[in-house]
Image (cartoon, rainbow, N blue to C red):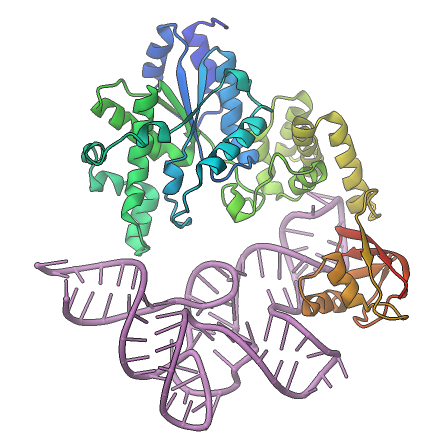
Length: 403
RNA sequence: GGAGAGGUACCGAAGCGGUCAAACGGGACAGGCUGUAAACCUGUUGGCGCAAGCCUUCGGAGGUUCGAAUCCUCCCCUCUCCA
């Protein structure tokens, strides 16, 4: 276990952090010289990690290397509520098996960043299941409605007249109680969690504990560059996505979003930093920085070789407009000697959900057969092998069987 | 319990008896351009049909009407104020 001086640790911890409450308290905790208990909450209903999660996880990695104990709190009970964002509807509760399975995949994915052998994984149902109705009433008595309404999304929802279900108020309270149960010294989360994390401090004090220090990390914007990255907004890049997806999606982010991604997400790397500075001065091409970032991300989750391959694939398909190396093959039965029409081929290849859609794609000139644009939807495709392309990025090798 | 306002396509939001498969914006997809799957410009965006056209859609179930997203009845859900 590293034994850096508390002041030096504080310095490291503070880097890239959005808010730290409070420096004095954290320093005092560090000075006691005991490993700190660092709480990090995770939602078991969405077990797929994306790049946004990497931001706090990287911070946890640093804390772990400083010798502190990382506690992954799986909010299996709170998942019944769902963090009130106003977007998500009340979620169905997950079965015990699902929770355990999700927690396991979580551990597996997290192992890319953390030493999971040293991570303590806990479930909040451990204590919530033992709490009685009087216990909940007591917990609720420690907070006021006015205080809860201070939370930004509650406030806006209340003002705009969008529904707030009563149980949503419970979320911050229970999350706060989790800190009591875990005796957390520090809690790490995204900036959107600030309210909940601060609430936990108040709950801890109400239960006679020292308040946890709070560390929030910037939220990563999604690939749209506007909303925070989230799977449900479909602007996320999952860490388990295939290399060329991670690479390609990264290349598709707006140039405006790029610098921020590099700031928030990138691991230290001299090349990246040089390009970053160059782009800021308007000297370097944003594309090159984007390439470097995309490469680093793929390398991180799939290794060096995959990164090189993903880049080669991208260059081939999008810069040189050639067909990729690996193309899925689709066999299509032939309804008659003339073969299926092009619409049927698109459908069979899974490139269109309906005949109308397929027809539109063809009429718009988005469909190529053996590199040649075909604009007649009812053109029949004789038995044989073809290279089918829809748009710039979807390819299939199509084999039309003889009738 | 009382009074009022609402529930529209992937999302937001118009429409309030026919001209509504439903304006507009976002998203998505396609085309052009390019330094990139960026930006920008153009187009498409319920299903079936070559087409004429037909079928399904505006919280749910009934009803009025030649004709309903639009009017009526009941039900479900949400918001605001009062108790």
